[in-house]
Length: 195
Ligand SMILES: [Zn+2]
Ligand SMILES: [Zn+2]
Image 1 (cartoon, rainbow, N blue to C red):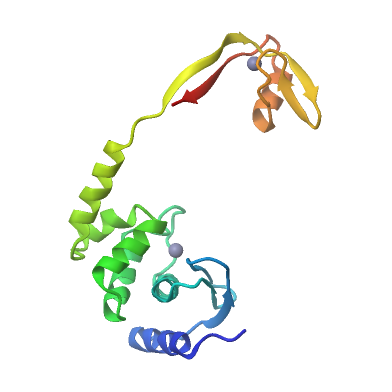
Image 2 (spheres, rainbow, N blue to C red):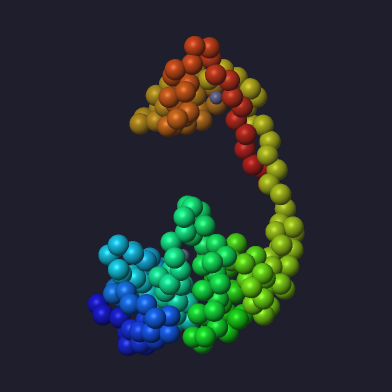
């Protein structure tokens, strides 16, 4: 499926402004409201799976173009850092997204974007961040309680799983390997979150 003309034009115009060669644009539909996107530098392609919300399609494409324009971060984890958001929020502003929409849609994917938006002086960002923090504070903390008191783990099969005989908790992966290797019985507690 080929990209809608507005999207192709947006890619051309953003890249021309920045003086960089445009990526190839791959466009597919997906069910649901939200779009997803990915930028593959080595293949020089930006792919969008477009949901039904047109504003979100636009933001998603601009988000990927911001990746295209932003030099690759040296460290992993800074993929959505300050350099990226400097480019992204500028693209959102220049290409027709109201600040409120940009903040809402972007922070719906990446909460950390609000912090960057505040530092970049995006209008309304400070209020949006305050509101987000207030919402977090208002949420009741999960109360954890002990469901089965501390005991030595004894392994047993339960269908395709390995479980602890005492509390029936599934033991998988690294934990399972560790427990199997241990010379002395490993002890654990089964916790659960009660309302
Ligand atoms: Zn991204
Ligand atoms: Zn147990």
